[in-house]
Image (cartoon, rainbow, N blue to C red; front, side, top):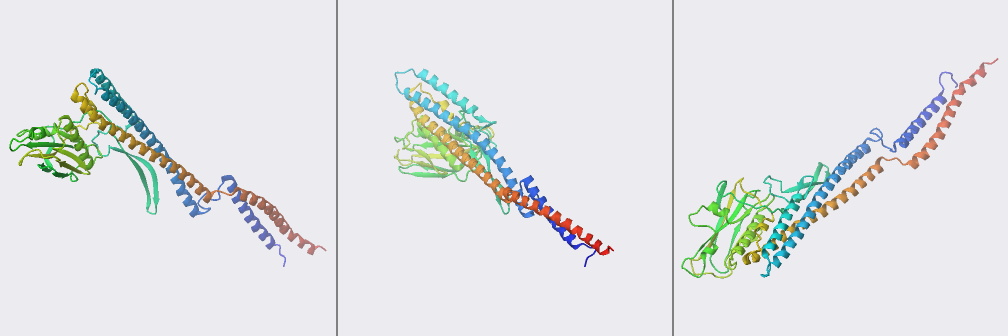
Length: 435
C-alpha cells in the first residue's frame, strides 16, 4: 500500500544516513584528536585507567627532577671527599718526610697546617643548593641524612612514595668537647668492668644506650697497684680519686654522637678514641686494650702485669647536655705535630685513620650516586613504558581511521541518494489521478 502520509522507505534511508553521519563524526574526531577514547563517554573504564596512568607519568616527571637534584648534590660531596683524600695523602707524604731527623720540621709543619686549612675550605664549600653532605654536627633529629624521592609505588590500597636515604659523612676539622659541669651526667651507664688477669676479657654491652645527636660518652680508667709490683697503675688511670668524675670524663677518652649514630657507632668511636689515647700516652695495649665488636666494648689483657690484687677498672659514662659540641670527622688533624720525635710517630698513626675516614666517605657517596643514577635511568624507561601503554589504550589507528573515513564518505553519498529516491516515491501517486 502506498501512502502520502507515511514513507517507510524514506524513514529507513534517513536512519541509515544518521548512522553513517554519526560514524563519520566519530572518525573525524579520531583524526582531529588522534585518540579513539578522547573523553569518558567514549569508554569510561579505559578512560579512567588512562587518566590514572597519566597522573603517574606526571608524578614520575617530578621524581626525575628530584633524582637529578639528588645526584648533583651527592656528586659534589663525592668529588669533595676525593679532593680531601688527595690532600690527606699529601699530608701523609709530609709526615713521612718528617720521619727523617735532618729536615726542617717547622717548615713541614707549616705545610701541613696549610693543607689542613685547605681541607676545611673544601669541606665548607662542598654544598649544592645549600645542602652540605660533608658536615654533620647538627643535633636536630634526622639532620644526619637526606631522603631523595625515588619512586611511586602503586598497590591496590593506594600509592606510597619511596626514598633513597643518603647519610652524611662528616669530614670537618672542628674539635669536639663535652660539658664538664652541667647537663645530666651518668656514671656507669653500663656496669664497670675489671681487667686483672692475663687472657682476661670483659665485655660492656652498649645496646641499651639511648643514642642521640649531642649525647657524649667517655671511658675512665682507674689502675690499682695492690703491692708495689712492676705494674705502673698511674699509666692506666685517667680519673683521680676524689675528683669531679664528670670533669675527668670530659677530659678523657670521649666520643660525641652524631645524628644517625647507633650503639655500634658509639662503641667504634670509643675504641678509636682509646687507641689514640694509648698511642699518645705510650700505653701498652697488651696490658689493656679496648676494642669494639658490634655494639660491645671489649676490654682485654694479653700479658699479666702484676700480682694478685692489681687491677684496672674501666667505666663508661655518659653526659647529656646542650653544651656538648660534636666535632668534625677529621678533628684529629689539629693534633698532628711533626716538630717533635713523639709527635712524628703519633702523626703517622693518626693520618692512617683520617685517610680511611675520608676514603670511606668518598666510597659511600660513590655508591649512593651510582644507585641514584640507576634509579634515574629506570624512571626514564618506566615513564616511556607508561606513555606507550597509555597510547595503546587511547590512541587512534590513523591508517584504519583513514580507510574508514573514505568508506563512510562513499556510504554517505549513497545514503543521500537513497533518501532522495525514497522521497520521490510519493510522486508516482500523481499518475493515478491524471485523467
